Structures are given as structure tokens and as C-alpha cells.
Length: 77
Image (cartoon, rainbow, N blue to C red; front, side, top):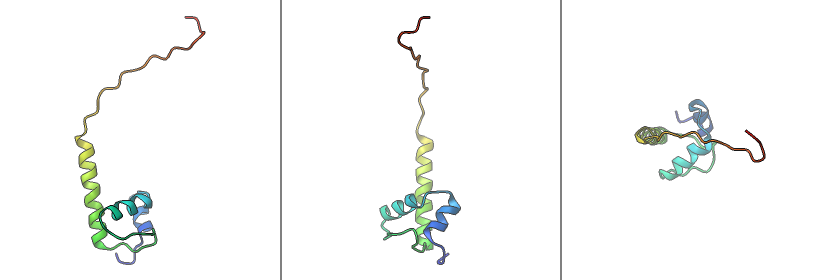
């Protein structure tokens, strides 16, 4: 995997390369360009981040959305 670039990886995963770069930077990797080669440690760290992110999203309970009635001014019923 050492020949693969961040933009190739992001294209395969259908994730914007900007997000991959931002996450990798937040995880402590020095990433300045989407042309940087991505190694196995980076891939593992990023995929672990995604698993945690998706797991957290599944735990969030969605409240029921009530329909809102929109009234137009000046119109008669």
C-alpha cells in the first residue's frame, strides 16, 4: 500500500480527500497534501476513526419531526 496516495485512497472509499487529510492530521500524522503516500498505519488509524464515528452516530437518537404549517400572507382560505 505504500505506493497509494491519499487521493487514491479517498477516491476508493468515496470520501473527500480533505476529510481524510483533516482526520489524519487530528490523529497526529503530518499530512500537508493529498499527494502524500498513505501507509498501513495511517489507513488503520483512519478506519478506526470511521468505525468510532459511525458507532457514535448509530447511538444518537433522532427525535420525531413535527410537520410545520406554512401560512402565506394575503391569501384567503
